[in-house]
Each structure stands twice: as C-alpha cells, then as structure tokens.
Image (cartoon, rainbow, N blue to C red):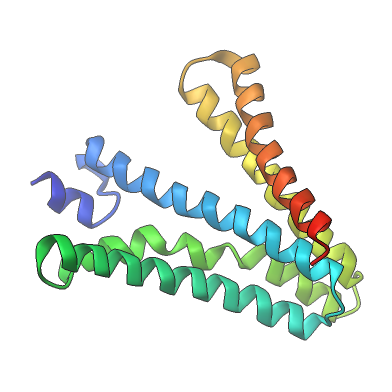
Length: 177
C-alpha cells in the first residue's frame, strides 16, 4: 500500500514516509537540475551566443535532462519488474522528474529580458547562475533547520551547498567553455 500512496505524489491527509520519499526524490531532481543549469549558463556566458541560442540551449538542456531521467527510470523499472511502468508508477516518475523541466524557467525569463533589451545577455546569464547558487544555499539552510541543528548549523549547510554551486561555476569558467 505504501507504494500506491507514493506513486501519486503528495496525497494530503495520508502524508507519511511514502510522501516524504516522493518529495525527497523530487527535490533531489531539482537540486541536480539546478547544479547542471549553473554549468550551462556559466558556459553560455563564456561563449559567443545570442539570446535565441542561449534560450534554445537552456530549454533543450532541461528537456534533455527530463527525457534522460524518464528513460533511466523506465529502464530501471523494466529491468527490476520485467514490465513497463504504467498508471501510478508512471505518474510518480513524471511527478518526480518534472523539476528537471522547471529548472529552465528562471534562466529562460532572464534570457527573455535580455532579448527584449532590458538587460545584457551576460548580466542575465550571471544573474541566472547567481539565483541558482542562492537557491542551493536556501535549500541547504532549510535542510539544516529541519534537522534541528539551529541557525548556525543551517547556515553552514547552506554555505556548503552554495559552495558546491560556486565550485561548479568556477570549474566551468576555468575550463573556458
């Protein structure tokens, strides 16, 4: 029964560990996509790309991440269960993997503003990377607070998560692409 509750995503009154597992998997995908998007926007800021090319890259990256997750989930399910995931299992896969698509929203809006001349493309890409690093910090802080470590432990957890995002940006910048 726990699998049935888990399969549909958060179910309100049922709550419980199954729902927490789905939410944890979903957040994991969002954090993974955020870190990936940091590398993408930093790479774009170092290249010679226009707004349309940057937007296409961000959107296709998000789509590619999402499709790769679905293929991997479906293949793993097929291998373990000897059948395709359908119904609730497939809905769970789609729900958990959807943040891989939403990771493009912020950068796409900023790139759109650059295309409209509101800000430069370089500023838009830098802001997208900065917002992503801040979001990693905030997720780290929230995790630290939820673990009961208090504000100093939450700040440390946030700083570590943000440092990972900054490290990804620095490695991408050092690679020169």
